[in-house]
Image (cartoon, rainbow, N blue to C red; front, side):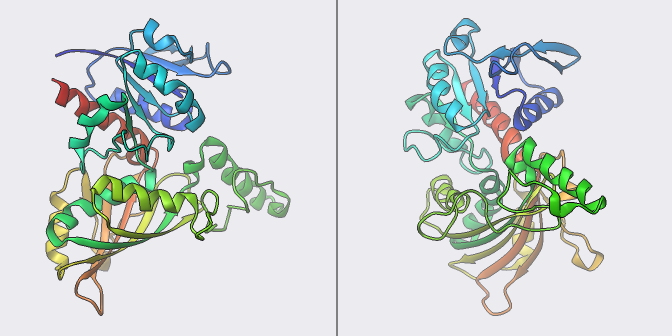
Length: 341
């Protein structure tokens, strides 16, 4: 089997660190792995498979110099905008975790369990986009149900962890909770979020648009349509909650035909990388605390609407740093290798 030269751009960030952890856990056919980051982190080391790797400074020439074949980007949209084309020009397939290329019509937006065939379009630009964290876990749940019942509309409310805002956002929650126990929460600063996040929920993720929805909410709307290749109605309310890892979503799904909850549960249980936790009488259902460090999406509270037999409700949880970012990126790389073989 061919082995690949792999770059991880943003190696010192939360998602970059997760990518390295996942690559340690799986049998990935790499020849060498080159961690890359800004000049601030260049020269630092990280441990991978018992070896110390030196983080290289990200430059336009490094992809050619290191003969990189797969480049996993997770260093922010401005970095991807500047350096991803250089990686692609050097011959690498870029798998980009930022929002910068997602809605480019020539760039495939991929969740391997949902639309793996779109990976074939990578040659147009050399880039494959990784969807938004909340979109990934949602479309994993939507796909088998859409195939069975013909999805018409999605109404989703999210409960998104602070890690979606990066390491500084997680630290802000921890610092505020420490201040709370020292009876000085009112003095605690908030920079990562527009309001205090400890002991609070904030119904705003990213900036508001003219239509009253936030940028995060519109990502879910637009990305879902692109991934499913279907004009599905989507309305989202994205909420930041005081947890560290694991995004949760409450979904109300409207179909063109009536739905059977037991059948839907069975369909989802057979879908790839989905685990059903659905025994509410025993208090068994998905929760963020259960999904940390897991590569699966957990689904429960599956029930048909009380008034409309074509409406299904469910609760979906996944580790946003893994399923919502690093795991999906690595799975795209694995599927790319499989398709190129």
